[in-house]
Amino acid sequence: MSDSQEMLGRLMRNLPGMAYRCLHDADWTLEFVSDGSTELLGYTPEDLVVDRKIAVTDLIHPDDLAQVSLEVEAALSERRPFSMVYRMQTASGEIKHISEVGRGIFSADGSLEALEGFLSDVTARVEAETALSAAQRREVLGQLSSGIAHDFNNLLSALYGVSDLMMMDMPQDDPGRTSIESIITITDKAKELTQQLQHLGKPAPPARHPSDLNRIVRSQLKLLTELAGSSEVVATLEADSLPVAIDPARFEQVLLNLVGNARDAIDGAGRIELRLAKNADRALLEVRDNGTGMTAQVRAKAFDPFFTTKVPDRGTGLGLAIIKDTVADCGGTIEVESEPGKGTTFRLLLPLATRTVPTELPHDRPVGTEIVLLAEDDDAVRLVIARGLRRLGYTVFEAANGEQALSVSRRHKGPIDLLLTDGNMPRMNGVDLARAFAQERPDAARIMITGDSMTAPEDLFLTVISKPVRLQPLADQVRELLDARAAPTAN
Image (cartoon, rainbow, N blue to C red; front, side, top):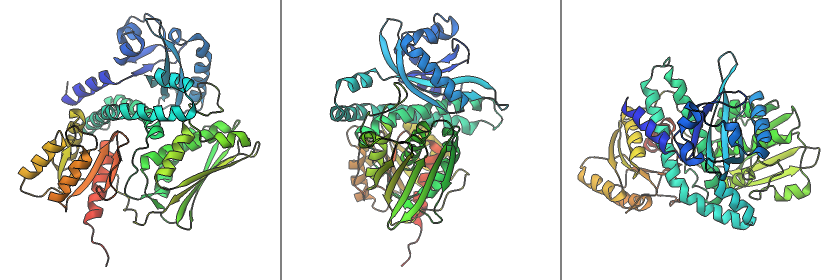
């Protein structure tokens, strides 16, 4: 077994939840279950897969089973992911609220092979939602999310990194790539759940460099079309670049939430329109549907946390609240226009950035020769990022905390081109490290990666990247920012 495979196995065992693969039969017979089943349900993987002491359908609360089945079958028929919350009974008899995200796996000929997904325990969240008022729930959720986001995102970053490293080593026709891609898909879903909790309570800092909304929307059109199911998606883009200072990953989530809501509001097949335009010094994004529309009472509460008009277990009521927070992060506004029977339009106005958007990078891996000082207290995350950057030609010095990073910098007499630091570290955090590093090496670039809602001074970092990170997008961004920094400025 290779080091990467061993690390991947360890990360799967440490995930705070349960990954699975099951057949599409009456009992949803499990073919694979991660070790997290023991903590989540009280059954070992052997209990559920090998010995099959109990079927999945017997674990789901009988009052919820029919709705869960309907949601899964609807998602499979529309070839879209499914996401829901329902109750399960553990081996000890305890009832837990479980969040499930998953999707059907289809072969090249279109036949359904299996279902894959991820289960996590959201009992504390559901109980808190029931017990607290909307304002209290928002405050508590922020406190809870900031406590779990850092460690959870480190696990996901390491899982992404090991998966990416294994993919780099595999030939394109290696059958093992399918399994690794399934792991990445499951990790994507776990990331979405974490981001929802994190962004609602304490929004993560937005990116510090401009991103072209046209480019982001264009790159997501295929996924948005699949998400819309039987409804038609029509996009009208602006001819010129629309640069706004926003985290592209968070804006992609905004698009997914808005189109998902539009799909749910349409009875049967309909039409979802996306329009981008320049409006004075702002970028305008409109998402319009011809669905059932909203009453004035629903419109007034649309952005409230946990408010939803969907049937139980079909929605958390977090999507629009998260969108509002994300838009506010970059100084923008959002409004909704809707009437019963006349559909709904969400209108986002985002301030245009003054800096230009860098040229889009090619799909080839961007290599480099610069020297990078990487400060990260999580060993697994530091290992995979360092290994990935070295494979692309960078020289990487590693440090487990801020004090160690400064010591490495002072011992190295040559240049250091980039400080890549985690935000939340013991003994000296990333912000304090960057301040001290900038005094000693003012010409070096600085980028912060954070797994929680930590903020940083505007002029201290070129950008702030949210965890969990993928190696390829991280390498793209490092190359893009270093090239932009090195480019001569016009007089």
